[in-house]
Length: 611
Image (cartoon, helix red, strand yellow):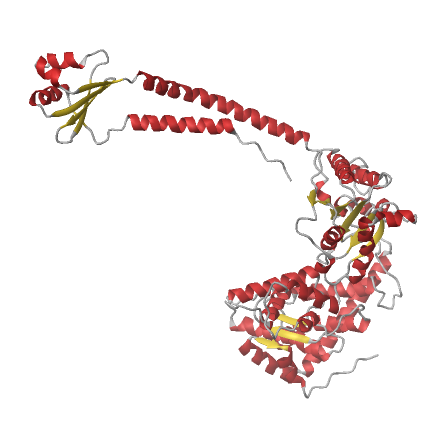
Protein backbone atom coordinates (compact mmCIF):
# COMPACT_ATOMS: atom_id res chain seq x y z
CA UNK A 1 0.00 0.00 0.00
CA UNK A 2 1.41 3.37 -0.93
CA UNK A 3 1.23 6.10 1.77
CA UNK A 4 -1.41 8.70 1.16
CA UNK A 5 -0.17 12.17 0.30
CA UNK A 6 -0.93 14.81 2.99
CA UNK A 7 -3.61 17.25 2.04
CA UNK A 8 -2.45 20.77 1.23
CA UNK A 9 -4.39 22.58 4.02
CA UNK A 10 -2.60 25.89 3.47
CA UNK A 11 -3.69 26.08 -0.15
CA UNK A 12 -7.24 25.23 0.94
CA UNK A 13 -7.24 28.11 3.47
CA UNK A 14 -6.01 30.55 0.81
CA UNK A 15 -8.83 29.52 -1.52
CA UNK A 16 -11.43 29.88 1.28
CA UNK A 17 -10.14 33.36 2.13
CA UNK A 18 -10.36 34.44 -1.50
CA UNK A 19 -13.92 33.15 -1.75
CA UNK A 20 -14.97 34.97 1.44
CA UNK A 21 -13.37 38.21 0.30
CA UNK A 22 -15.00 38.04 -3.10
CA UNK A 23 -18.38 37.22 -1.54
CA UNK A 24 -18.07 40.06 0.94
CA UNK A 25 -17.22 42.53 -1.81
CA UNK A 26 -20.07 41.31 -3.96
CA UNK A 27 -22.70 41.45 -1.20
CA UNK A 28 -21.44 44.76 0.16
CA UNK A 29 -21.68 46.34 -3.26
CA UNK A 30 -25.00 44.77 -4.14
CA UNK A 31 -27.79 47.26 -4.71
CA UNK A 32 -30.78 44.99 -4.00
CA UNK A 33 -32.82 46.80 -6.69
CA UNK A 34 -32.22 50.19 -4.97
CA UNK A 35 -32.36 53.42 -6.98
CA UNK A 36 -29.63 56.00 -6.54
CA UNK A 37 -30.88 59.56 -5.93
CA UNK A 38 -29.31 62.93 -5.10
CA UNK A 39 -29.27 64.71 -1.75
CA UNK A 40 -31.80 67.21 -3.12
CA UNK A 41 -34.27 64.39 -3.75
CA UNK A 42 -33.66 63.20 -0.19
CA UNK A 43 -34.49 66.67 1.11
CA UNK A 44 -37.69 66.96 -0.97
CA UNK A 45 -38.88 63.50 0.09
CA UNK A 46 -38.19 64.40 3.74
CA UNK A 47 -40.35 67.51 3.40
CA UNK A 48 -43.19 65.57 1.72
CA UNK A 49 -43.24 62.87 4.43
CA UNK A 50 -43.01 59.86 2.08
CA UNK A 51 -39.96 58.38 3.83
CA UNK A 52 -40.58 55.31 5.98
CA UNK A 53 -37.01 54.87 7.30
CA UNK A 54 -33.48 56.22 6.83
CA UNK A 55 -30.41 54.09 7.53
CA UNK A 56 -26.90 55.59 7.54
CA UNK A 57 -24.04 53.12 7.01
CA UNK A 58 -20.71 54.93 6.74
CA UNK A 59 -21.02 57.36 3.84
CA UNK A 60 -24.06 55.56 2.38
CA UNK A 61 -27.64 56.64 3.12
CA UNK A 62 -30.29 53.98 2.48
CA UNK A 63 -33.93 55.09 2.10
CA UNK A 64 -37.15 53.09 2.29
CA UNK A 65 -40.33 54.89 1.15
CA UNK A 66 -43.85 54.27 2.37
CA UNK A 67 -44.79 52.62 -0.93
CA UNK A 68 -41.97 50.10 -0.48
CA UNK A 69 -39.56 51.66 -2.96
CA UNK A 70 -35.87 51.65 -1.95
CA UNK A 71 -33.32 54.35 -2.72
CA UNK A 72 -29.82 55.29 -1.71
CA UNK A 73 -27.41 58.23 -1.89
CA UNK A 74 -23.96 59.12 -0.58
CA UNK A 75 -22.57 61.81 1.73
CA UNK A 76 -19.12 62.83 2.77
CA UNK A 77 -17.51 60.79 5.51
CA UNK A 78 -17.31 63.73 7.94
CA UNK A 79 -20.76 65.13 7.14
CA UNK A 80 -23.69 64.80 9.56
CA UNK A 81 -27.06 63.80 8.04
CA UNK A 82 -28.95 66.20 10.31
CA UNK A 83 -26.79 69.15 9.23
CA UNK A 84 -27.14 68.12 5.57
CA UNK A 85 -30.94 68.10 5.76
CA UNK A 86 -31.13 71.44 7.61
CA UNK A 87 -28.79 73.06 5.05
CA UNK A 88 -31.00 71.64 2.29
CA UNK A 89 -33.94 73.60 3.74
CA UNK A 90 -35.69 70.89 5.75
CA UNK A 91 -37.32 72.20 8.92
CA UNK A 92 -35.68 71.14 12.20
CA UNK A 93 -38.91 69.65 13.49
CA UNK A 94 -39.28 67.59 10.32
CA UNK A 95 -35.67 66.44 10.65
CA UNK A 96 -36.24 65.50 14.27
CA UNK A 97 -39.33 63.46 13.32
CA UNK A 98 -37.53 61.42 10.61
CA UNK A 99 -36.89 57.75 11.54
CA UNK A 100 -33.07 57.93 11.15
CA UNK A 101 -30.83 55.06 12.36
CA UNK A 102 -27.01 55.01 12.38
CA UNK A 103 -25.23 51.61 11.78
CA UNK A 104 -21.82 50.87 13.31
CA UNK A 105 -19.61 49.76 10.37
CA UNK A 106 -16.18 50.24 11.88
CA UNK A 107 -15.66 46.56 12.85
CA UNK A 108 -16.96 45.22 9.51
CA UNK A 109 -14.89 47.70 7.55
CA UNK A 110 -11.84 46.75 9.58
CA UNK A 111 -12.17 43.04 8.82
CA UNK A 112 -12.97 43.65 5.16
CA UNK A 113 -9.95 45.87 4.73
CA UNK A 114 -7.78 43.39 6.62
CA UNK A 115 -8.99 40.49 4.46
CA UNK A 116 -8.54 42.38 1.20
CA UNK A 117 -5.09 43.54 2.30
CA UNK A 118 -4.05 39.99 3.25
CA UNK A 119 -4.94 38.48 -0.14
CA UNK A 120 -1.69 39.51 -1.93
CA UNK A 121 0.35 38.38 1.06
CA UNK A 122 -1.41 35.01 1.16
CA UNK A 123 -0.87 34.53 -2.56
CA UNK A 124 2.86 35.23 -2.24
CA UNK A 125 3.22 32.88 0.73
CA UNK A 126 1.23 30.20 -1.09
CA UNK A 127 3.47 30.50 -4.17
CA UNK A 128 6.65 30.03 -2.13
CA UNK A 129 5.09 27.12 -0.22
CA UNK A 130 4.19 25.44 -3.51
CA UNK A 131 7.75 25.91 -4.85
CA UNK A 132 9.29 24.49 -1.68
CA UNK A 133 6.92 21.51 -1.78
CA UNK A 134 7.83 20.82 -5.42
CA UNK A 135 11.54 21.03 -4.62
CA UNK A 136 11.09 18.64 -1.70
CA UNK A 137 9.17 16.20 -3.91
CA UNK A 138 11.92 16.31 -6.53
CA UNK A 139 14.50 15.70 -3.84
CA UNK A 140 12.58 12.69 -2.55
CA UNK A 141 12.29 11.36 -6.08
CA UNK A 142 16.03 11.74 -6.58
CA UNK A 143 16.72 9.98 -3.29
CA UNK A 144 14.45 7.07 -4.33
CA UNK A 145 15.96 6.79 -7.82
CA UNK A 146 17.89 3.70 -6.85
CA UNK A 147 14.90 2.00 -5.23
CA UNK A 148 13.34 -1.03 -6.87
CA UNK A 149 10.19 -0.50 -8.93
CA UNK A 150 8.96 -4.03 -8.37
CA UNK A 151 5.24 -4.38 -7.70
CA UNK A 152 4.17 -6.49 -4.75
CA UNK A 153 1.13 -8.73 -5.20
CA UNK A 154 -0.26 -10.35 -2.07
CA UNK A 155 -2.36 -13.49 -2.06
CA UNK A 156 -5.31 -11.48 -0.77
CA UNK A 157 -5.61 -9.69 -4.09
CA UNK A 158 -6.60 -11.25 -7.38
CA UNK A 159 -5.46 -14.83 -6.90
CA UNK A 160 -4.23 -16.97 -9.77
CA UNK A 161 -3.93 -20.74 -9.41
CA UNK A 162 -2.88 -23.63 -11.63
CA UNK A 163 -6.57 -24.14 -12.49
CA UNK A 164 -6.43 -20.82 -14.35
CA UNK A 165 -3.53 -22.11 -16.46
CA UNK A 166 -4.92 -24.57 -18.97
CA UNK A 167 -2.57 -26.85 -20.85
CA UNK A 168 1.19 -26.72 -20.08
CA UNK A 169 0.85 -29.95 -18.05
CA UNK A 170 4.57 -30.79 -18.07
CA UNK A 171 5.54 -27.27 -17.04
CA UNK A 172 3.04 -27.29 -14.17
CA UNK A 173 4.34 -30.65 -12.93
CA UNK A 174 7.86 -29.23 -12.65
CA UNK A 175 6.60 -26.18 -10.78
CA UNK A 176 4.47 -28.11 -8.28
CA UNK A 177 7.54 -28.96 -6.19
CA UNK A 178 8.45 -25.27 -6.06
CA UNK A 179 5.04 -24.61 -4.54
CA UNK A 180 5.44 -27.52 -2.13
CA UNK A 181 8.79 -26.18 -0.98
CA UNK A 182 7.39 -22.71 -0.32
CA UNK A 183 4.56 -24.24 1.72
CA UNK A 184 6.63 -26.84 3.60
CA UNK A 185 10.32 -25.90 3.39
CA UNK A 186 11.20 -27.89 6.53
CA UNK A 187 10.33 -31.16 4.75
CA UNK A 188 13.11 -30.59 2.24
CA UNK A 189 15.60 -29.13 4.73
CA UNK A 190 15.37 -32.19 7.01
CA UNK A 191 16.39 -34.55 4.23
CA UNK A 192 19.16 -32.25 3.03
CA UNK A 193 17.51 -31.26 -0.23
CA UNK A 194 17.91 -27.82 -1.73
CA UNK A 195 15.22 -26.32 -3.85
CA UNK A 196 16.42 -24.57 -7.03
CA UNK A 197 17.22 -20.94 -6.35
CA UNK A 198 16.15 -19.87 -9.78
CA UNK A 199 13.68 -21.15 -12.36
CA UNK A 200 13.71 -19.81 -15.90
CA UNK A 201 10.60 -20.18 -18.03
CA UNK A 202 11.37 -20.47 -21.72
CA UNK A 203 8.78 -20.32 -24.47
CA UNK A 204 7.36 -18.41 -27.38
CA UNK A 205 5.43 -15.19 -26.72
CA UNK A 206 1.90 -15.80 -25.47
CA UNK A 207 2.43 -19.33 -24.15
CA UNK A 208 1.66 -18.36 -20.53
CA UNK A 209 5.03 -17.86 -18.83
CA UNK A 210 3.91 -14.86 -16.77
CA UNK A 211 0.63 -16.58 -15.92
CA UNK A 212 2.51 -19.63 -14.62
CA UNK A 213 4.63 -17.44 -12.35
CA UNK A 214 1.49 -15.80 -10.96
CA UNK A 215 -0.03 -19.23 -10.43
CA UNK A 216 3.00 -20.36 -8.40
CA UNK A 217 2.60 -17.37 -6.09
CA UNK A 218 -1.15 -17.95 -5.85
CA UNK A 219 -0.78 -21.65 -5.01
CA UNK A 220 1.99 -21.07 -2.47
CA UNK A 221 0.16 -18.05 -0.98
CA UNK A 222 3.35 -16.01 -0.62
CA UNK A 223 4.26 -12.43 -1.61
CA UNK A 224 5.06 -12.04 -5.28
CA UNK A 225 7.42 -9.32 -6.53
CA UNK A 226 7.02 -8.64 -10.24
CA UNK A 227 9.36 -6.51 -12.36
CA UNK A 228 10.45 -6.29 -15.98
CA UNK A 229 14.10 -6.60 -16.94
CA UNK A 230 13.97 -3.23 -18.66
CA UNK A 231 12.99 -1.48 -15.39
CA UNK A 232 16.47 -2.05 -13.92
CA UNK A 233 18.39 -0.14 -16.55
CA UNK A 234 18.48 3.67 -16.52
CA UNK A 235 20.63 6.30 -18.19
CA UNK A 236 22.67 6.75 -14.99
CA UNK A 237 25.40 4.25 -14.24
CA UNK A 238 24.85 2.21 -11.09
CA UNK A 239 21.10 2.75 -10.79
CA UNK A 240 20.25 -0.72 -12.10
CA UNK A 241 22.60 -2.43 -9.64
CA UNK A 242 21.16 -0.34 -6.81
CA UNK A 243 17.63 -1.38 -7.75
CA UNK A 244 18.67 -5.03 -7.81
CA UNK A 245 20.10 -4.75 -4.29
CA UNK A 246 16.96 -3.01 -3.05
CA UNK A 247 14.72 -5.64 -4.66
CA UNK A 248 16.51 -8.56 -3.03
CA UNK A 249 16.59 -6.75 0.33
CA UNK A 250 12.79 -6.34 0.20
CA UNK A 251 12.38 -9.97 -0.85
CA UNK A 252 14.42 -11.24 2.10
CA UNK A 253 12.27 -9.21 4.49
CA UNK A 254 9.13 -10.83 3.05
CA UNK A 255 10.49 -14.37 2.73
CA UNK A 256 9.25 -16.88 1.82
CA UNK A 257 8.44 -15.08 -1.42
CA UNK A 258 8.90 -15.09 -5.18
CA UNK A 259 10.75 -12.61 -7.37
CA UNK A 260 9.54 -12.68 -10.96
CA UNK A 261 11.68 -10.97 -13.60
CA UNK A 262 9.89 -10.79 -16.93
CA UNK A 263 11.90 -10.45 -20.17
CA UNK A 264 15.18 -11.04 -18.36
CA UNK A 265 17.03 -10.98 -21.66
CA UNK A 266 16.84 -7.16 -21.44
CA UNK A 267 19.65 -7.28 -18.82
CA UNK A 268 20.82 -10.88 -19.05
CA UNK A 269 22.46 -10.89 -22.47
CA UNK A 270 26.01 -12.08 -23.05
CA UNK A 271 28.54 -9.86 -21.33
CA UNK A 272 31.15 -8.41 -23.62
CA UNK A 273 28.74 -8.37 -26.54
CA UNK A 274 28.80 -4.59 -26.84
CA UNK A 275 31.44 -2.45 -28.50
CA UNK A 276 32.08 -0.23 -25.47
CA UNK A 277 33.76 -2.65 -23.09
CA UNK A 278 32.41 -4.25 -19.92
CA UNK A 279 31.56 -1.21 -17.82
CA UNK A 280 28.18 -0.27 -19.26
CA UNK A 281 25.08 0.02 -17.11
CA UNK A 282 23.44 -3.19 -18.34
CA UNK A 283 26.44 -5.35 -17.50
CA UNK A 284 26.74 -3.87 -14.01
CA UNK A 285 23.08 -4.69 -13.43
CA UNK A 286 23.64 -8.26 -14.62
CA UNK A 287 26.69 -8.64 -12.37
CA UNK A 288 24.62 -7.54 -9.38
CA UNK A 289 21.87 -10.06 -10.22
CA UNK A 290 24.47 -12.83 -10.43
CA UNK A 291 25.94 -11.82 -7.08
CA UNK A 292 22.58 -11.60 -5.31
CA UNK A 293 21.36 -14.94 -6.63
CA UNK A 294 24.46 -16.79 -5.53
CA UNK A 295 24.67 -15.00 -2.20
CA UNK A 296 21.38 -15.78 -0.48
CA UNK A 297 21.52 -16.05 3.26
CA UNK A 298 21.15 -19.51 4.77
CA UNK A 299 17.52 -20.41 5.31
CA UNK A 300 16.19 -17.59 3.14
CA UNK A 301 13.33 -18.98 1.06
CA UNK A 302 13.40 -16.58 -1.86
CA UNK A 303 12.93 -18.08 -5.30
CA UNK A 304 13.69 -16.16 -8.47
CA UNK A 305 11.57 -16.94 -11.52
CA UNK A 306 12.45 -15.40 -14.85
CA UNK A 307 10.81 -15.54 -18.27
CA UNK A 308 12.29 -15.12 -21.72
CA UNK A 309 11.67 -16.15 -25.30
CA UNK A 310 15.35 -15.83 -26.21
CA UNK A 311 17.30 -18.25 -23.99
CA UNK A 312 20.06 -18.53 -26.60
CA UNK A 313 21.29 -14.99 -25.91
CA UNK A 314 21.46 -15.23 -22.11
CA UNK A 315 24.80 -15.08 -20.35
CA UNK A 316 26.05 -18.59 -19.41
CA UNK A 317 26.65 -17.46 -15.82
CA UNK A 318 22.89 -17.00 -15.37
CA UNK A 319 22.12 -20.58 -16.31
CA UNK A 320 24.74 -22.36 -14.19
CA UNK A 321 23.74 -24.38 -11.09
CA UNK A 322 23.20 -22.11 -8.11
CA UNK A 323 21.45 -19.44 -10.12
CA UNK A 324 18.87 -20.34 -12.76
CA UNK A 325 19.54 -24.02 -12.39
CA UNK A 326 16.13 -25.25 -13.54
CA UNK A 327 14.83 -24.62 -17.03
CA UNK A 328 11.13 -25.11 -17.73
CA UNK A 329 10.06 -25.06 -21.35
CA UNK A 330 6.56 -23.75 -21.98
CA UNK A 331 5.70 -24.90 -25.47
CA UNK A 332 2.87 -24.16 -27.86
CA UNK A 333 -0.33 -25.96 -26.80
CA UNK A 334 -1.30 -29.19 -28.48
CA UNK A 335 -4.84 -30.19 -29.48
CA UNK A 336 -5.97 -31.22 -25.99
CA UNK A 337 -4.34 -28.19 -24.37
CA UNK A 338 -5.97 -25.81 -26.85
CA UNK A 339 -9.39 -27.23 -25.99
CA UNK A 340 -8.69 -26.76 -22.27
CA UNK A 341 -7.51 -23.18 -22.87
CA UNK A 342 -10.67 -22.42 -24.85
CA UNK A 343 -12.76 -23.76 -21.96
CA UNK A 344 -10.97 -21.44 -19.53
CA UNK A 345 -11.45 -18.37 -21.71
CA UNK A 346 -15.11 -19.15 -22.39
CA UNK A 347 -16.11 -19.42 -18.71
CA UNK A 348 -17.68 -15.97 -18.54
CA UNK A 349 -19.03 -16.03 -22.10
CA UNK A 350 -22.47 -17.50 -22.86
CA UNK A 351 -22.06 -19.95 -25.75
CA UNK A 352 -24.71 -21.45 -27.99
CA UNK A 353 -25.19 -25.20 -27.84
CA UNK A 354 -23.81 -25.55 -31.36
CA UNK A 355 -20.36 -24.31 -30.30
CA UNK A 356 -17.87 -27.20 -30.50
CA UNK A 357 -14.66 -26.26 -28.68
CA UNK A 358 -12.96 -29.46 -29.85
CA UNK A 359 -13.55 -28.49 -33.47
CA UNK A 360 -12.27 -24.99 -32.80
CA UNK A 361 -9.14 -26.43 -31.16
CA UNK A 362 -8.56 -28.61 -34.20
CA UNK A 363 -8.79 -25.61 -36.50
CA UNK A 364 -6.42 -23.39 -34.50
CA UNK A 365 -3.15 -25.27 -34.95
CA UNK A 366 -0.24 -22.98 -34.12
CA UNK A 367 -2.28 -20.72 -31.82
CA UNK A 368 -0.72 -19.81 -28.48
CA UNK A 369 -2.69 -19.37 -25.28
CA UNK A 370 -2.76 -15.59 -25.81
CA UNK A 371 -4.00 -16.11 -29.37
CA UNK A 372 -6.86 -18.30 -28.15
CA UNK A 373 -7.78 -15.76 -25.48
CA UNK A 374 -7.84 -13.04 -28.11
CA UNK A 375 -9.90 -15.28 -30.39
CA UNK A 376 -12.67 -15.79 -27.82
CA UNK A 377 -12.66 -12.08 -27.00
CA UNK A 378 -13.02 -11.17 -30.68
CA UNK A 379 -15.91 -13.62 -30.99
CA UNK A 380 -17.66 -12.06 -27.98
CA UNK A 381 -17.16 -8.57 -29.45
CA UNK A 382 -18.59 -9.72 -32.77
CA UNK A 383 -21.62 -11.27 -31.07
CA UNK A 384 -22.27 -8.12 -29.03
CA UNK A 385 -21.87 -6.00 -32.15
CA UNK A 386 -24.65 -8.02 -33.82
CA UNK A 387 -26.89 -7.68 -30.71
CA UNK A 388 -26.67 -11.38 -29.84
CA UNK A 389 -27.06 -12.73 -26.33
CA UNK A 390 -24.83 -15.75 -26.96
CA UNK A 391 -21.65 -16.42 -28.92
CA UNK A 392 -22.25 -18.71 -31.89
CA UNK A 393 -19.96 -21.02 -33.84
CA UNK A 394 -20.18 -18.64 -36.78
CA UNK A 395 -18.88 -15.78 -34.61
CA UNK A 396 -15.87 -17.85 -33.58
CA UNK A 397 -15.09 -18.97 -37.14
CA UNK A 398 -15.29 -15.37 -38.35
CA UNK A 399 -12.94 -14.35 -35.55
CA UNK A 400 -10.43 -17.07 -36.53
CA UNK A 401 -10.29 -15.62 -40.03
CA UNK A 402 -9.92 -12.11 -38.64
CA UNK A 403 -7.07 -13.13 -36.33
CA UNK A 404 -5.17 -15.09 -39.00
CA UNK A 405 -5.90 -13.14 -42.16
CA UNK A 406 -6.96 -9.74 -40.88
CA UNK A 407 -10.33 -7.96 -41.31
CA UNK A 408 -12.02 -7.91 -44.69
CA UNK A 409 -11.78 -4.66 -46.65
CA UNK A 410 -15.19 -4.78 -48.26
CA UNK A 411 -15.14 -1.05 -48.88
CA UNK A 412 -12.13 -1.37 -51.18
CA UNK A 413 -13.35 -1.06 -54.76
CA UNK A 414 -11.55 -3.19 -57.37
CA UNK A 415 -11.92 -2.84 -61.11
CA UNK A 416 -13.14 -5.81 -63.13
CA UNK A 417 -9.65 -6.32 -64.52
CA UNK A 418 -8.06 -6.37 -61.04
CA UNK A 419 -10.79 -8.66 -59.73
CA UNK A 420 -10.18 -11.10 -62.60
CA UNK A 421 -6.42 -10.98 -62.06
CA UNK A 422 -6.84 -11.61 -58.32
CA UNK A 423 -9.24 -14.51 -58.93
CA UNK A 424 -6.86 -16.33 -61.30
CA UNK A 425 -3.94 -15.63 -58.97
CA UNK A 426 -5.67 -17.13 -55.93
CA UNK A 427 -7.11 -20.08 -57.87
CA UNK A 428 -3.57 -20.79 -59.09
CA UNK A 429 -2.43 -21.16 -55.48
CA UNK A 430 -5.47 -23.21 -54.48
CA UNK A 431 -5.37 -25.54 -57.52
CA UNK A 432 -1.75 -26.57 -56.98
CA UNK A 433 -2.23 -26.78 -53.21
CA UNK A 434 -5.18 -29.12 -53.68
CA UNK A 435 -3.50 -31.39 -56.23
CA UNK A 436 -0.12 -31.81 -54.50
CA UNK A 437 -0.25 -34.21 -51.51
CA UNK A 438 2.46 -32.40 -49.53
CA UNK A 439 0.37 -29.24 -49.17
CA UNK A 440 -2.17 -28.59 -46.45
CA UNK A 441 -5.87 -28.85 -47.41
CA UNK A 442 -7.46 -25.70 -48.82
CA UNK A 443 -9.77 -24.11 -46.27
CA UNK A 444 -10.85 -20.94 -48.05
CA UNK A 445 -10.26 -18.96 -51.23
CA UNK A 446 -11.27 -15.29 -51.38
CA UNK A 447 -10.74 -12.27 -53.61
CA UNK A 448 -11.83 -9.85 -50.88
CA UNK A 449 -8.87 -7.77 -49.80
CA UNK A 450 -7.48 -8.47 -46.33
CA UNK A 451 -4.64 -6.46 -44.85
CA UNK A 452 -2.09 -5.71 -47.57
CA UNK A 453 -3.16 -8.70 -49.69
CA UNK A 454 -5.56 -8.31 -52.60
CA UNK A 455 -6.93 -11.83 -52.05
CA UNK A 456 -6.37 -14.85 -49.82
CA UNK A 457 -5.82 -18.57 -50.24
CA UNK A 458 -5.96 -20.16 -46.81
CA UNK A 459 -4.70 -23.72 -46.37
CA UNK A 460 -5.06 -25.32 -42.95
CA UNK A 461 -3.43 -28.56 -41.73
CA UNK A 462 -5.60 -31.45 -40.56
CA UNK A 463 -3.08 -32.51 -37.93
CA UNK A 464 -0.14 -31.03 -36.10
CA UNK A 465 3.28 -31.41 -37.68
CA UNK A 466 6.55 -31.57 -35.81
CA UNK A 467 8.69 -32.13 -38.88
CA UNK A 468 8.62 -31.01 -42.50
CA UNK A 469 10.02 -33.29 -45.20
CA UNK A 470 11.83 -32.29 -48.38
CA UNK A 471 8.88 -33.33 -50.55
CA UNK A 472 6.53 -31.13 -48.50
CA UNK A 473 8.89 -28.20 -48.93
CA UNK A 474 8.93 -28.75 -52.69
CA UNK A 475 5.13 -28.94 -52.85
CA UNK A 476 4.80 -25.75 -50.81
CA UNK A 477 7.22 -23.96 -53.14
CA UNK A 478 5.14 -25.00 -56.16
CA UNK A 479 1.95 -23.82 -54.45
CA UNK A 480 3.54 -20.48 -53.53
CA UNK A 481 4.45 -19.96 -57.21
CA UNK A 482 0.93 -20.86 -58.35
CA UNK A 483 -0.25 -17.23 -58.43
CA UNK A 484 2.80 -16.11 -60.40
CA UNK A 485 2.36 -18.91 -62.94
CA UNK A 486 -1.40 -18.32 -63.29
CA UNK A 487 -0.86 -14.64 -64.11
CA UNK A 488 1.81 -15.56 -66.64
CA UNK A 489 -0.29 -18.25 -68.37
CA UNK A 490 -3.65 -16.45 -68.50
CA UNK A 491 -2.55 -12.83 -68.90
CA UNK A 492 0.81 -13.17 -70.67
CA UNK A 493 2.56 -11.08 -68.03
CA UNK A 494 2.93 -10.86 -64.25
CA UNK A 495 2.03 -8.08 -61.83
CA UNK A 496 3.31 -6.89 -58.46
CA UNK A 497 0.83 -9.24 -56.75
CA UNK A 498 3.27 -12.19 -56.33
CA UNK A 499 5.85 -10.00 -54.56
CA UNK A 500 5.38 -11.53 -51.10
CA UNK A 501 5.09 -15.02 -52.64
CA UNK A 502 8.48 -14.67 -54.31
CA UNK A 503 10.03 -13.50 -51.04
CA UNK A 504 8.74 -16.57 -49.21
CA UNK A 505 9.89 -18.87 -52.01
CA UNK A 506 13.44 -17.49 -51.92
CA UNK A 507 13.56 -17.70 -48.12
CA UNK A 508 12.32 -21.30 -47.98
CA UNK A 509 14.52 -22.50 -50.82
CA UNK A 510 17.61 -21.02 -49.20
CA UNK A 511 16.71 -22.58 -45.85
CA UNK A 512 16.39 -26.00 -47.54
CA UNK A 513 19.94 -25.73 -48.89
CA UNK A 514 21.79 -23.90 -46.10
CA UNK A 515 20.03 -25.05 -42.91
CA UNK A 516 18.43 -28.44 -43.56
CA UNK A 517 20.92 -30.03 -45.98
CA UNK A 518 18.21 -30.82 -48.56
CA UNK A 519 20.53 -30.80 -51.59
CA UNK A 520 23.36 -32.76 -53.16
CA UNK A 521 25.87 -30.55 -51.33
CA UNK A 522 25.55 -32.97 -48.46
CA UNK A 523 24.55 -32.79 -44.78
CA UNK A 524 26.14 -29.41 -44.18
CA UNK A 525 24.61 -26.38 -42.47
CA UNK A 526 26.07 -23.27 -44.06
CA UNK A 527 26.22 -19.97 -42.20
CA UNK A 528 25.51 -21.51 -38.79
CA UNK A 529 27.29 -18.62 -37.04
CA UNK A 530 25.41 -15.83 -38.79
CA UNK A 531 22.35 -15.80 -36.52
CA UNK A 532 23.93 -13.60 -33.84
CA UNK A 533 21.84 -10.62 -32.81
CA UNK A 534 24.75 -8.56 -31.41
CA UNK A 535 26.89 -6.25 -33.44
CA UNK A 536 29.85 -6.95 -31.16
CA UNK A 537 29.73 -10.73 -31.61
CA UNK A 538 29.16 -10.43 -35.35
CA UNK A 539 31.86 -7.80 -35.78
CA UNK A 540 34.84 -9.26 -37.58
CA UNK A 541 33.01 -12.57 -38.09
CA UNK A 542 34.32 -14.55 -41.05
CA UNK A 543 31.80 -16.41 -43.19
CA UNK A 544 32.20 -20.13 -42.50
CA UNK A 545 32.04 -21.12 -46.18
CA UNK A 546 34.03 -20.08 -49.22
CA UNK A 547 33.01 -18.03 -52.21
CA UNK A 548 32.92 -21.22 -54.25
CA UNK A 549 30.45 -22.73 -51.77
CA UNK A 550 28.37 -19.54 -51.91
CA UNK A 551 28.19 -19.86 -55.67
CA UNK A 552 27.12 -23.50 -55.34
CA UNK A 553 24.46 -22.53 -52.81
CA UNK A 554 23.08 -19.86 -55.15
CA UNK A 555 23.04 -22.42 -57.95
CA UNK A 556 21.11 -24.99 -55.87
CA UNK A 557 18.63 -22.36 -54.65
CA UNK A 558 17.98 -21.29 -58.23
CA UNK A 559 17.56 -24.92 -59.36
CA UNK A 560 15.13 -25.64 -56.51
CA UNK A 561 12.99 -22.61 -57.36
CA UNK A 562 13.08 -23.38 -61.12
CA UNK A 563 11.98 -26.98 -60.51
CA UNK A 564 9.06 -25.74 -58.39
CA UNK A 565 8.17 -23.23 -61.13
CA UNK A 566 8.15 -25.95 -63.80
CA UNK A 567 5.90 -28.21 -61.69
CA UNK A 568 3.49 -25.35 -60.98
CA UNK A 569 3.32 -24.37 -64.66
CA UNK A 570 2.75 -27.96 -65.77
CA UNK A 571 -0.20 -28.34 -63.40
CA UNK A 572 -1.74 -25.01 -64.44
CA UNK A 573 -1.44 -25.82 -68.17
CA UNK A 574 -3.07 -29.25 -67.68
CA UNK A 575 -6.03 -27.72 -65.82
CA UNK A 576 -6.64 -24.47 -67.72
CA UNK A 577 -10.32 -25.16 -68.39
CA UNK A 578 -10.96 -26.09 -64.79
CA UNK A 579 -9.16 -22.96 -63.59
CA UNK A 580 -11.27 -20.76 -65.88
CA UNK A 581 -14.49 -22.23 -64.48
CA UNK A 582 -13.38 -21.92 -60.85
CA UNK A 583 -12.12 -18.35 -61.39
CA UNK A 584 -15.38 -17.24 -63.03
CA UNK A 585 -17.40 -18.66 -60.15
CA UNK A 586 -15.05 -17.06 -57.62
CA UNK A 587 -15.47 -13.65 -59.27
CA UNK A 588 -19.25 -13.95 -58.86
CA UNK A 589 -19.36 -15.12 -55.24
CA UNK A 590 -16.03 -13.60 -54.01
CA UNK A 591 -15.58 -16.30 -51.31
CA UNK A 592 -15.28 -20.09 -51.60
CA UNK A 593 -14.77 -22.52 -48.72
CA UNK A 594 -12.78 -25.75 -48.88
CA UNK A 595 -15.79 -28.02 -49.46
CA UNK A 596 -17.08 -25.89 -52.34
CA UNK A 597 -13.62 -25.80 -53.88
CA UNK A 598 -13.13 -29.58 -53.59
CA UNK A 599 -16.32 -30.29 -55.58
CA UNK A 600 -14.57 -29.17 -58.77
CA UNK A 601 -12.01 -31.99 -58.46
CA UNK A 602 -14.22 -35.09 -58.30
CA UNK A 603 -12.99 -36.27 -61.69
CA UNK A 604 -9.43 -34.90 -61.42
CA UNK A 605 -6.79 -37.42 -60.39
CA UNK A 606 -4.09 -36.29 -57.98
CA UNK A 607 -0.68 -36.90 -59.64
CA UNK A 608 1.71 -39.24 -57.92
CA UNK A 609 4.97 -37.74 -56.74
CA UNK A 610 8.17 -38.81 -58.40
CA UNK A 611 10.53 -40.61 -56.07
